Amino acid sequence: MAKEFIVDAPNPEVTFPQIQRWAAANGFQLNGSASAGNFRGKPGGIEGMLIGEIIGNYTVSGGRATILVNKDLPAGIVGERLSRFGLRLIGSR
Image (cartoon, rainbow, N blue to C red; front, side):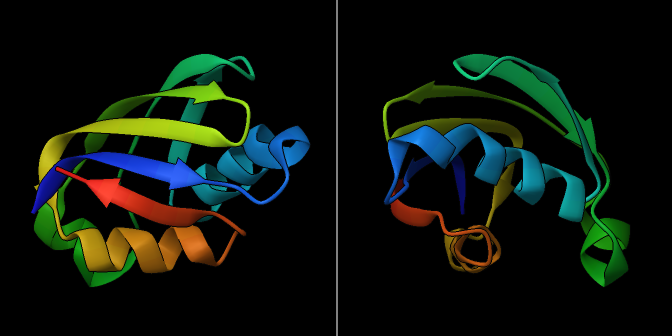
């Protein structure tokens, strides 16, 4: 279980749009810019029922992003959901 996720994107120019698509697809309202911001929301499905609302923030630098959340989440599931949007989980803690 982790609260911090380090993400790599193959093309630094689209890191933020990929994060925007990931947030929208997972029920998060994103507020911020291409370099930093926050999000909150409740994922859909059974995960959302079990986990409840997630609040977090992100920072982007080039092709790398750091995502911090307020709940311990399974890195494997987070990585899989990020990968759907071209983002690769390279670390978590």
